[in-house]
Amino acid sequence: QVQLVESGGGLVQAGGSLRISCAASGRTFRGYDTAWFREAPGKEREFVAVIRWSGSNTYYAESVKGRFTISRDNAKNTVYLQMNSLKPEDTAVYYCAKSSECSEYGCSRSNYWGQGTQVTVSS
Image (cartoon, rainbow, N blue to C red; front, side, top):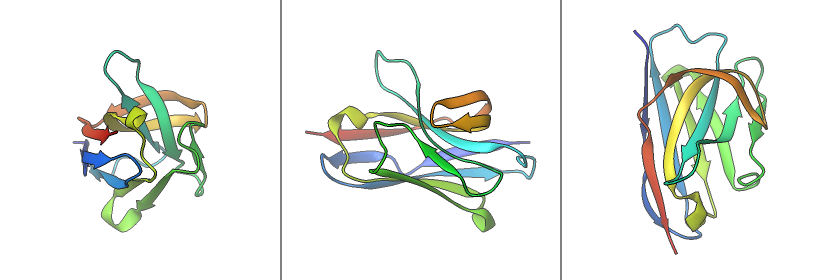
C-alpha cells in the first residue's frame, strides 16, 4: 500500500506565496527521489523541482529557480514546495511523484503519483 496525497493548493494573487505538501504513506519509498511536476491546461506536464533521496540535493527547473523551494520533513513523511513570487503562468495542477535519477532536467522514471492539487495565480 503506497499513497501520495497533495494538499495546500488554492487561489493566490500574483506576487503572493503558497506552500503545497505531498504526504506519503507506507514505508516502501526508500531509494526514490521526490519530485514536483505541474500541468497547465493545453500544455504537457513539466518538471518543477526534486529533492533526492541520496543526500540533500535539490534541483529546480529554470522557470522557478530562485522562487520555489523544495524541502522535506522525514518524521512526517512529507515533502513541501514553497512557492514565492507567484506568476499567472504558474497556474497549473501540481503533482508530486516518487521518481528515479532526477536532475534539473527531470526524471528518468516516475512510478508513483498523487492526485494533484490546483494552484491558481490571478493577475
